[in-house]
Length: 98
Image (cartoon, rainbow, N blue to C red; front, side, top):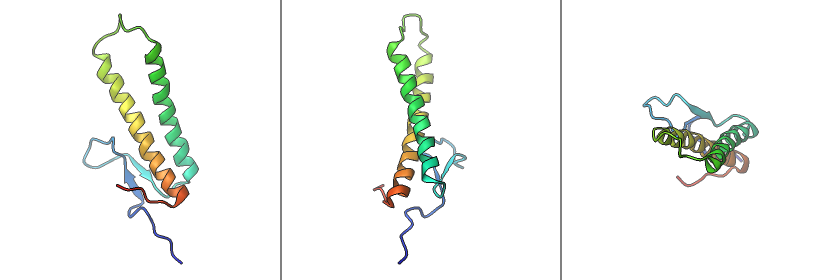
C-alpha cells in the first residue's frame, strides 16, 4: 500500500522569506533528525536572545535597536516553527492543517 506524500513539492519555502523567488527552502526529504536539529538551533537562539533582553537595562539603549532585535527574533522563531512543522510531519507521517 502506498503512503500519501504530505509534501507535493520536495522543497518548501520558509514563511520568513520576503522575496518572490524564495531562496531559503526546507528540504522535506532531509533526515527528520537534521530538520529537527536545525529547528532547535533557531528556537534556542531566539530563546537565548529573549533571555538576554529580559535581564538587560535599556536606559542606555538606542530606540533603533528595537526593530533590529524584533526582526531577528521573528526570523529565528518563524524559521524554527517552519522546520518543526516539517519534522513533525515527517516523523509522524501526519499532514498539518494549513
